Image 1 (spheres, rainbow, N blue to C red):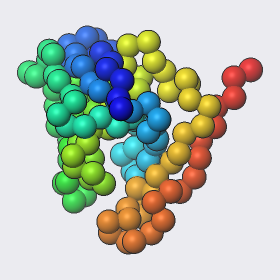
Image 2 (image 1 turned 45 degrees about the vertical axis):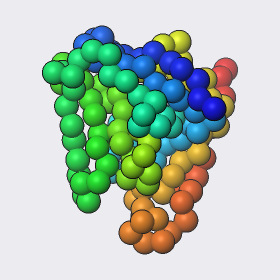
Image 3 (image 1 turned 180 degrees about the horizontal axis):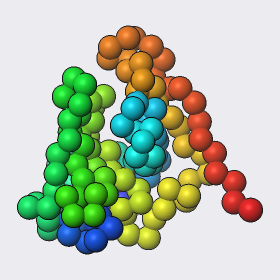
Length: 134
């Protein structure tokens, strides 16, 4: 199923362990995700363990308030979020996973967060991002 990975924010204050599905890598085009630019992979809620930094972790909610976006209050790095589309999952920032980078993925699906399917019934996918190294 998932692969067990360790992760942390930039400064190391927030550390976690997660059972992630690397085949689920994706981005979203909602207003927040467009600004943060992160690639996220899925982890079940019960497959995510915060190891350190509960006191440094901050929560941000917007629009419907359903999704819970977590970031380090010290360095500002987004680490994970509880999804609106599936509240039984976290989206985990690939860049925070040990030994991983968003550039490890040649192609990333982009989900339609600007016209969220829960609000509009619109298509779930809005495009694809590709990375081609020189």
